[in-house]
Length: 97
Image (cartoon, rainbow, N blue to C red; front, side, top):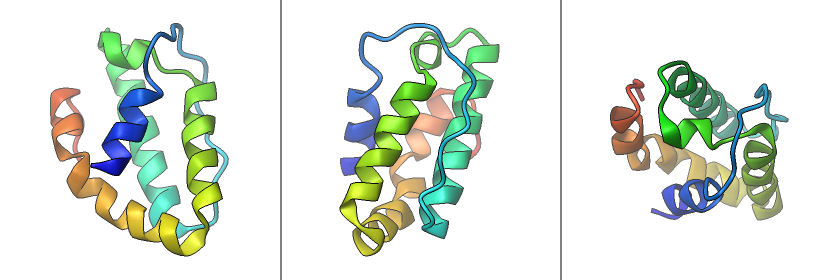
């Protein structure tokens, strides 16, 4: 739930999607997760999904920064749980997990 809360909180009150391309954090589980998340957001924008239209690169960067600050072990632990925690999000926005 932590990850979903972080992602949802950073989505509030922003508009216009700029090009994504997150800065990898060097933790394979996290880099893989963020790439999937970024891809899902891009698909949502293409479909006119209002949530994903509110996302932008700055928000992705902020989320990645939070995970970098956790340190590699804690970030890896959270990112390994991320696919399960995000299943509903992906489903709601028409993405596979």
